[in-house]
Length: 202
Image (cartoon, rainbow, N blue to C red; front, side):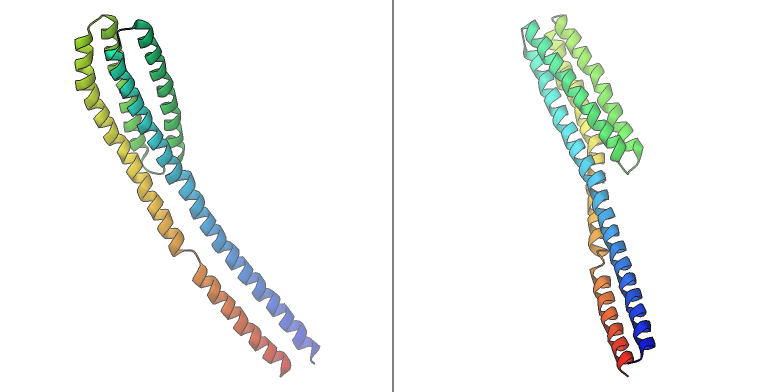
């Protein structure tokens, strides 16, 4: 057997193996990157936005409790709960700012609307301390409720974008999974290896 042929064939097989491994690793990295992006952006943002929506619902319910309560101590307790929920919402907004891949103005609009809601809440609370319950109820049902509906619309922009981005990353991950390319490279390597064996034998 020609040792020169054997040595040359051995080198060629090693090169083929390295190229195939390099190609496979790159495809795995691409898939991992898409998966990571899907987690860090759409999932994190969607969860944070969902939490903000839940917090807003809780705060609005607490505001309704304030205008219905006749107990000052109970009202103070509810106000503290609202402040606690507001702090939680602001932390969730921080997460959205950190991970959102869309236009930051979308977040600014939602954040601004959320912060502006505080003035309405403070107006209602001030009226309750002045024993002007009817006026407080009117603001809660009128201006307050309308502001919350506008806030929901602003937040939905963030949620829809995150949802669409998740679909985009998923489609890209499925399209670029590299399975066909890896299989093709394996068959190519097998065919080339067969030719090398024939080359050695002849």
